[in-house]
Image 1: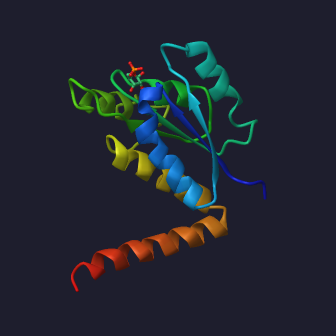
Image 2: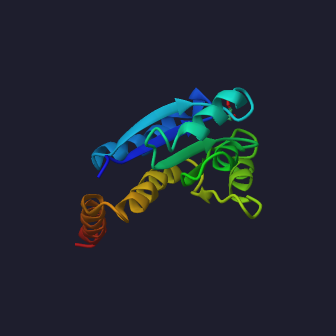
Length: 160
Ligand code: RP5
């Protein structure tokens, strides 16, 4: 089986600190990723080219973080059949509600899985990508089981 690969895209390098949380989790699970700064409005041609070629280049899942009128995940999803997970970025004026609604409210036909705003969303995007990959990769599935057990244990330990 070919090695799984995830793409982490974001609209600006100002998203990098938050989106790096996804890369850290993928790294812990031994899944490789490539990070790309590509904007749906500032570099639209490059974004579409990247999305169009993703599958042929061996990308299995795309995580796309964007803020404001956050159309990155939707535009990428429109140009590929690789599953796209959107992460809405926190914004200065509307606190990420703008990003959340732009990402989550995809009209029918082109789905985008939308996570929570900010860091929690970036982390969950990585875990969700792993769940998608885990459907056909037993190793990843097993690691996710171990991760959940550890998570439960760490919460229970707080009550001792
Ligand atoms: C979006 O605009 C990016 O995803 C970013 O969250 C937001 C602001 O970008 P910068 O002005 O900080 O580059 O495209």
